Structures are given as structure tokens and as C-alpha cells.
Amino acid sequence: MSRTNLFLKCIDCGREYNPEALHYLCPTCEDENREGQPQKGVLKAEYRFSQPPSFDLLKESGFIDLLPIKSRNSLPNLRVGNTPFYNISNINNLQLPFSLYVKDDSQNPTFSYKDRASAVVSAYAKENNISTIVAASTGNAGSSLAGICAAQGQRSIIMVPASAPIAKLTQIIMYGATVVPVKGTYDDAFDLSLLATKEFGWYNRNTAYNPYTIEGKKTAAFELFDQLGRTIPDRIFVPVGDGVIISGIFKGFEDLLGLGIIKKMPIIVAVQSVGSQNLVSNLNTSIFIISPSKTIADSISVDVPRNFNMAKQFINRYDGESVVVSDSEIIEASSMLARSTGIFTEPAAAAAFAGMLKYQKDNKIPNESKNVVLLTGSGLKDLKGVERIVNVPDAIEPSIGELKRIAQKI
Image 1 (tube, rainbow, N blue to C red):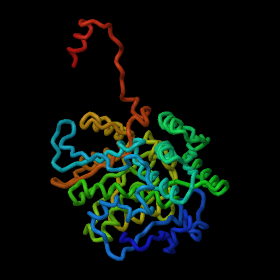
Image 2 (cartoon, rainbow, N blue to C red; image 1 turned 90 degrees about the vertical axis):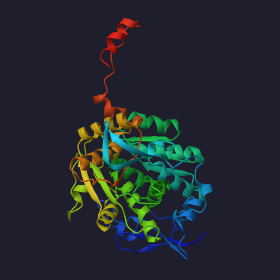
Image 3 (cartoon, rainbow, N blue to C red; image 1 turned 135 degrees about the horizontal axis):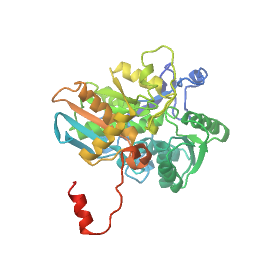
Image 4 (cartoon, helix red, strand yellow; image 1 turned 180 degrees about the vertical axis):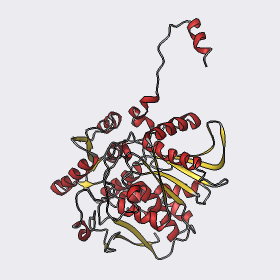
């Protein structure tokens, strides 16, 4: 192994911590945290090498040298990552003047991007003889942790807002996890899970709290680079809620940049719903102001984006961009994506596609450029989100005459 040191660094004060001890937030900066404000003291994993490895060597080892675990054998015996990457040449039968790719992370084992984080957190727990993991979730992170823990023989406890979609709750229960519905928002469930961690000693998977969730989520950046023939795209559209997925994508490319494997960063676009834009609306403010969230895209519906400070740092440092889209634009994008490509995504994932469509409409995507849309979850996760545009026809008599009547309208 060419890695000589792994350490955790506070994004706020810069203090470094030995990963051999269990850390969530920087103890010094954590004391400054206040209710209704994004967390301070988020820790970032960084790696030092005696000799920088090549991308081929990293890929051959499963990128273990850039992960906070010791062996790939600690990972679940499921195919996490290495998700499909499609070139989309036209939308609504109209040829695109630029290159468009979609990365379909709904093809992970529990049908969402969150499996990347759960796999690494679970592997870390396995290597450290931790048997119980807790998480707060609107659904995807919970079902992901539940499924990964089922594969690893670990116990998972999932705290969800009572309004979480039934499809996601069903998934969690089927995996054998303990579900704790909480009267309140995702933020209420998040805070309760932190109290449970301190009270019972359960290992906490929460994004923007456990530093290794970022490390799992960054692996998509390595795959994008490889799937694009060892090149970087011009733009990547990412759905944003807590700010962890976009931070993971930035972190993955930053790792490659630091190793000299790439020479510049792609432009990464944060896409949020108009009804839940607390991250992008505060990028240029000195005081964080909350607007209560209300959007059909439940997976990115967040009042207090826990990873706001890290996401903001990445966006500012690497000239990231942002765009907001309405619920109607999200639903339209979901339908358009499904009809044009055969890929059915949940509203949160469709938000990224809606952001790309908005850029296209505003002539902000240059011809001949390479653009990627990150699709983070299956449409089967939240059927309620698209029920307004799904009209099931009335049943007909089983006769050819009745069928002819329908055939004339097709």
C-alpha cells in the first residue's frame, strides 16, 4: 500500500485528528453549534502518500488507498457502485447539440446513491468490531443502511420522520432494521439520533456527522472519470439537500487533483428545489436564514443542511454553480427522462435532470461540451411524487372491438 497516513481535518479550525480514535465532529468547534444552524466542526478525511499512486493502481485495488478502511474484504458482498453510465443523444426526439451522460445510481443494491456511504461506514464498523449502527433518514439513507447491514450481519436502527414515503419504510422493515418514526421533520429525527449515539453508544451513520459518508459518496467521481475515458466532464448536475453528495463529488475529484491525475476540476452544479433551497440561498449570506421546506422531492427536503459549510467551501473554492427548479419542473423532468431514456427516477434525482434542462433553456450549456447528470434514486422509491401525472385508463371488455376503439387513438 502506498498510502502512508490517513488523518481527519476540521474544515473550520484546521485541527487534525488521528482516525484510530472514533471521531464525528471536531470537539472544539462542536461546542459552537447552535440549534437551527448548519454544523461546525465537520471532519474531512485526507490522505498522504510516500509515492502518489497511478489511477490504474487505485482502480485495481478498488480505491482502498483512498478510503478509510483497511481491506476491500470488509465491504459488503454486494455490488455497490460501478453503476451504469449512459450517453443520451436526444430528448423528446430532439438531437442534443452537446454531449449528455447520466449516471444511474438507482442501480445500487437498495436502489439509491446512499449505498456508497453505507458500504464504507459498515466496513469501518466491521473492522472496528461495531455491531449496531443508527441513522436518521427521510427514507433512502435508512433503507440503504438497513440493506447493507443485513448483508453484513449488523444491526441497524433507523429514525425517520413520520411522513417518510411508505415504499422506503417498507424497504427498511423488510431488511430487518428497527424503524423509529419520529413526530416531526428530518432535522428532528437527526437530532434524536445524535442523542441516541451519546446515550447508547451506537455508531452513527448520519451524513455530515460521520466523516466517512463523504468518503463513500466520492467514489462516483472516480467512476465518472474512468467511464469518460479518463477525462473529466465540463459540468456535473447534482441534486442537493444536506450537501453531502455534492461534497462527495467535489472530494473525489479533489483527491484526483491532489494526486496529479487530473489538472482541473469540472464545474459542479448544485440543483435544489425552489421549495427547499436552504443551501444555495445561503451561499452568499453572512447569517444563515432558514425557509421551511416544502417540496415533492422528499430526499432533498432539508431545513438545515448539515453539510452546508463543507459544500459552501467546495463550491467557492472550485467555482461551482447552482440552480433552483420548481416542483412542476421536477415532475416534467421525471416524465421526460423516463419517456426519452427508459430510466425512472424519484423526484429528488429528477431535480438534477431538471437543472440541466433549465441550463439548456437558458443557453448555458455550450455546444460540444460534455455534461453529466447524477441520478441518485429509483422512481419506485416514491410513487406519490408522480401520481399527479399518472392516469390509469379505465378497464375495457376483453373484446377486439373495444381494443380497436383504443387503437384508433394511439
